[in-house]
Length: 528
Ligand code: ACM
Ligand code: ZN
Image 1 (tube, helix red, strand yellow):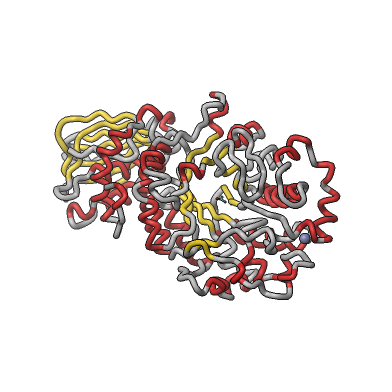
Image 2 (cartoon, rainbow, N blue to C red):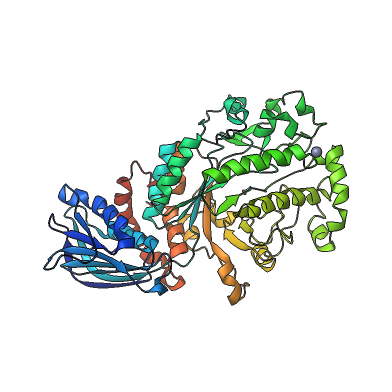
């Protein structure tokens, strides 16, 4: 009998017999869980060719086949649940609706769809980490609204709860901003005309639809607006965001100098090229970013707003009078520890003062609006960002950053937490799903431990969870890069440490290949 649940539940005790879904099966629920009872009725509808009857409060007296949702112990937390399956009844207990939703996902996985029965068992389950995320890079290769919704369904099925959209980059700006229609009305993706790009823009209406879809599946959509780097596209759309003496203000860059290394992926500009970051000395930059983020915060109810912050070069800043004037006012913020991290930086070693100024200012803006800023860990180290800012870790420990020529602190996660931040772990050594399966095979993802050994016990709660970016993939490649590694990510995020067992995961995986086909065309060749 199938009990191949992924992620593995915290406690699963097999029982005897099975519950058969029949036309006479009724669903009842305490008031907070009524919408979930309705949802489950729809999920089970193929079993009987119609929807099951749903009612508030207790099961009907004398009912011989029912499913009942009730309020469980507060210890189950926001997302935990208990599920008891007997031959004549299924009891679901949760303290919050998200927990009942995850009980429904477990039921969906347990259901034998050929004959519509569910094995008797008892489960108590709750996640190890509150943040279980995937990032889609819609700026390098646009992914349609329906594509994104399909991923929301997949995330929910595996009890993942964060979808991060990388909406802007050098290549394109893919979110409609009412105040600045020029960001999206010119198809700047054409500058890579020799590459077959997937192109598109989300209208604000599309985003509302995506967010509503995700909310009903307990997935938070976290938007990312990149700054100060990875933003050439918007600077070319609005030239006064460039430093005033940047030649690109007048002449369009010659993109032929910016070769493709592989389809869909630009190389980093050579140091001799004018790599553009927003001018950090000009107030126009901040007016622009604040206007954009205000619209973003109106559209996305997410408590977290990602403001990018990775891989700046700052080459133009050292030649710009506005940037230099601002940098001079920041000299007193320098410190020997931070200066030491930048001792290998190319160009002006003090350029990080400007970078930090811009990121801090935008982070404070987000905090003032009652949201939580997230920043890639780049140079967050020792950075005195606003309390509550979340650091999005991507540098593996102890390596040099190849773009910024800065030394990553011995353990950047420990460093961020010691500076008062929570951390999302997307260490590129294990969690970049755009890396191929040779570099990052399934067992490597499965074995990843998001909490570094050095972190003291009382600080471990500051690691929110593991989160996999899928950078720059064409739509038809995203499935192949993401599956089945997403299932390993789901399990390492949800299941208790002692519950993680590679041999057991491998045994449970094949039945999921069958299930995934129900979601559409899936490319699971990597798991063979
Ligand atoms: C990153 O990979 N630049 C976050
Ligand atoms: Zn400037």
